[in-house]
Image 1 (tube, rainbow, N blue to C red):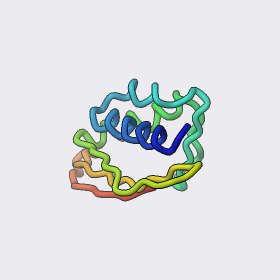
Image 2 (image 1 turned 30 degrees about the vertical axis):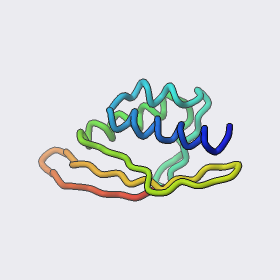
Image 3 (image 1 turned 180 degrees about the horizontal axis):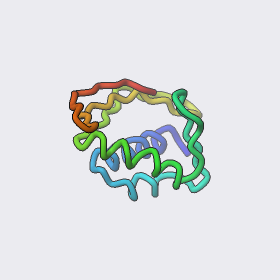
Length: 100
């Protein structure tokens, strides 16, 4: 897959999450997907990915992802900003996080 194709895929995944379309987001991933996050154990497979994404969307009903920077040659890296209003029981606060 070319860099351009990888970047288009990343933007399609952002759009799916911004639209809260979990099924479309999952369809962009292979069944064998492994997502690594330093805060938790790797998520293996679409089912595990769904189990991580759905609570995030429920917690942030206005979640919006924006790619700030993207680059690569054979591997693509992106820096993404996520913003949203956190609904967690009685706690409500605006959250902005950058991750890559």
